Length: 365
Image (cartoon, rainbow, N blue to C red; front, side, top):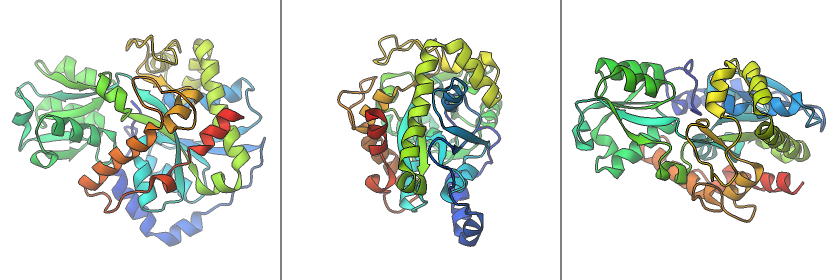
């Protein structure tokens, strides 16, 4: 799913970001001023994931006059570092980092939610685990500082187990799957294809939480987002609006031309077209999620109207029982868990860390 790529290091995102921002001189030396103008180049960064490929579709089909200069780095820490030092204008990544960035004044903002886990993520337990209480004192695998960390914490809490009663082990998904199969950990939060690998190879293992369930779809916890630098938002607003419009022009083209679009995305992110089609589906999910079929891709791709409603800058409700303006609730939920986990001591300010007005401007334009 929308997750730190398998080549990312084992340290938590938060720990690595602390190390980077502690070296303020390095940040100053890396700073490069924005020089593009509207209709020119926008500097975009992301790791290899099909959910981040829709601006490629827009550019390939001449749906925007912007040009995108793409930096693909498999470590989101480096991407956020480049965004903070104005070497990138836009970063696609998972949604949970916004409150941390705001709490630490890192110089960029969360603009909007872009897509939702639609059956890709699971919590799986070892055959020996008969009920959640059996996990007390045992090791469970998560990616520290990521969405899997929060999903595990919530599921444990919902089932009467404090997150401090288990030993959280920081493992990337491939290693977590291997640790599950070998019996080194008693549970793990895993996304495709690693979850399916464990269920297939570890007889008696079972899924106890699934991102296709109503709770996870309704909270929109496991999602991707668009981030933009404060400089880009403040000083190049018209171009920022056009960049967001281009992304969603690509989404809408994909809905009616999925075969061609999936090939464009596959070529851009280095996936096979078969894998891209399995992850994104064929674009047939309706905007109100009436055809909510988990077989049709493992991501639900929001329309510009969907994400504007999630931001609270357009009338109506987003899909899956979500509420108008729910981004603030999502922000506060992740804020709560970062404080529980000790990653931040004070809350990231929603108003300072987000810019939903941009979505309204893109929709209105």
